[in-house]
Structures are given as C-alpha cells and as structure tokens.
Image (cartoon, rainbow, N blue to C red; front, side, top):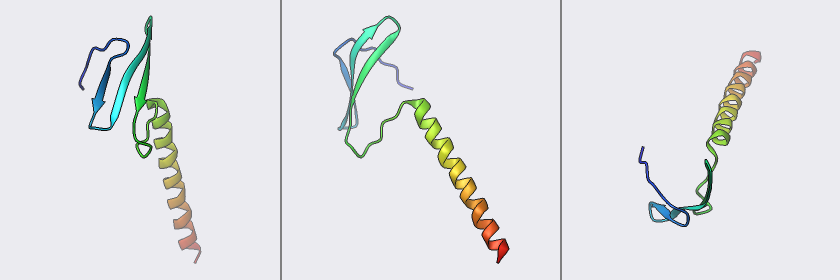
Length: 73
C-alpha cells in the first residue's frame, strides 16, 4: 500500500486518467473528489463488497438451478 500525505486542494493521479483530490478536512473526516472515465467503476469499499457477495450468491443460485433442471430431464 502506498501512503501519501495531501492537504486540502491537493490531488494525486492514478494512471493518466484518474485524479483524486482532497476537497475538505473536518476533524477525522476527509472529503475526496474522484475524476475518472465513465467506464471505470468507483465504489465505496463496503458497497463493493456487497456487490461482490450478491454476485457470488447469484452465481451459486443459478448453478444450483441449472443442475436441478438437468437432473429433472
């Protein structure tokens, strides 16, 4: 993991097309802005984990249903 110090208004670049800017600092909370191409998904980590779990559950359920349909034949 790369750890960087940034002040309000300062930014960092990822590749040539993703910019992360510190917008505001209030106590222990930091507000950031992210500029990225539309085709690059950006999620909060807790939302990303929920999406991954839902996708895993959906793929497991679909596989079970397909197997059940094969056994019925």
